[in-house]
Image 1 (tube, rainbow, N blue to C red):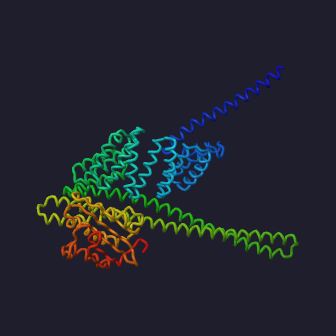
Image 2 (spheres, one colour):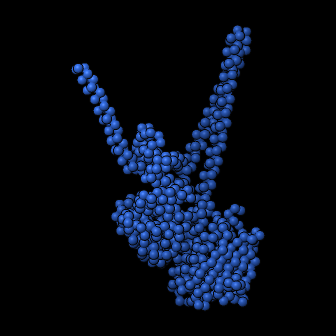
Image 3 (tube, rainbow, N blue to C red):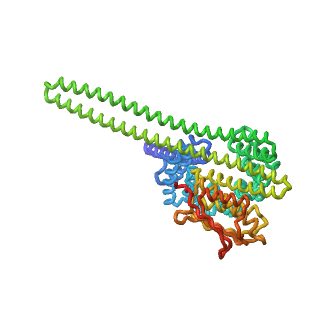
Length: 593
């Protein structure tokens, strides 16, 4: 009886111990998962160790296993392994879709989109963001939906699709009163203001800056504060309010007390340089322009040196592998000679010894073949590394070219600002008109370099997007006119050598129509561009009164010179929808040539 009691007590103690272990494991998981979610970004090494620990303890294909896969993918992305991150997200998404784990599935889609955004795979990123937003909407998670839609708007901004991005921001503002997330409000208004500056709607941009400011100032992070002042300074510059632009830029610089944000500080110095140039304070302007260039060159040089160091390290490793293979091959050859000598010396021995020697020779020959094969693989790997190095050099060249276009655009904008300042000091109407026309031509070329800076190739411009942006910019300068624009433009990427003269011709045509064609201030302007029989045809028309003789002013002479440069034939006359001017362009280059 006593022995039976002891046995029962023993079994009870074992069961209590097992329950304690299970409870302890659950407690450990709760504690570790909280730590994991809180430190994915600031302590990725510790978070990665926890992920690997619990992946081993979790059942493959379970919800927890999928959640851990997605967290590990986030860490891979943070630590610079985007390829592993994408694979991890896709595997997690497959499990979560089967398990119908909506919350985690939305998390994985959203973070996969973030990973692909930084890999410049914008279309795939947008598709995954939309999957995440759709799930958040079904779960009535407005905060998650808003954060994901904000990511989509940021991609549209990077692609130059400002209208699409503004549509999303406007849609988000309409529902944000239900979320009551002031930090998210600040992001929306701040990004919306940035787009409005790009569209030259400076007053509306400043209104959005002020709506974002209270929430931004509550943050302890200097980065959003500096970004907001960059936007405000650029808006003031656009309104020719140079003192206010300087004040905003100085506020932004003051937030960076530890010089920890050189990228944003460089943009603030750039704004200060433009403002001082416009105020004719050349020494101050040059001083801040030098600071801007110094930071930009430092950032670019640092990134380039890191890439070159990585290339040299990989190349050196391949070279050492090749030397090792050659050394092994020499050793094998030496062994082969020794075996052949031993075989000759043992020809008189018994059959068993001869068999063993032949077997040894076969082993050595197999080893030789293996080493030769390894050497060939090493050579192929070295060739692939060299090819990759060349591709990186091409990417660096394109980056240099983009930086050049950025600086050319900045210099042209600076010249335009100085002409605008000079224009306001003149009383002579003729001189004012000349300066206004010159500034319009300069802004036309500046817009080309802006598009080239955003284009990954740095050599061509999307014809449709550029013509519409240029037309809206010129028409917007004539606020007293009510003009409707019509476009019929083929999808073309035009090389800069052809884009510049074509853009200047369009600038002259639109400007002339706005000045002389519409007596009542209302009308329609149309632009059609198409390729017919290997010729690029520009058909420009307006609903104005037209003219019987070709004008002989500077603008007309400029168009004649540009037409000769493009080897273009010109004809004009009245049509059913207005006065037409056609240019048949024989000499032009696209991005494919």
